[in-house]
Image (cartoon, rainbow, N blue to C red):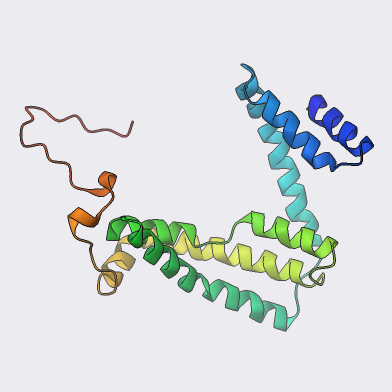
Length: 191
């Protein structure tokens, strides 16, 4: 961590973004034999800083009624976002089931959206009122995502009318059925 801070300081002294210096230091250190241990040690620090960031946003207050309405619209837009992911994945050769499950999983908003909104507020691109709106939208998307994941099979049955299966020859090679006609034994596993 000291190397990243030193690189940050050196780049700032040179008039270049310190973040770029930290990034380059991280890239250089990523090939080091102890990189995995360094990552494991820094994960807890990252989690602590992420929690502090969320607490800071939470202490900023709640949005007004219009803000809650905008957050609700953003959460409702997750249906469109999931559908777009499903269509794109199917066009890329994924099966209907893989496309639907992946689309449902990818539809939620991530905490990265909060970071981007925070940077936009600091730089004056967005008004400060957008930060609590995005916090509510991200939290709402997590709630919606957990509700969807607990009912995935029933959602898949419901969407079969709109998501048509692709012919096998149009599927990506990893999505095609495995032919095991000449095998004497089959070993199945996750890894």
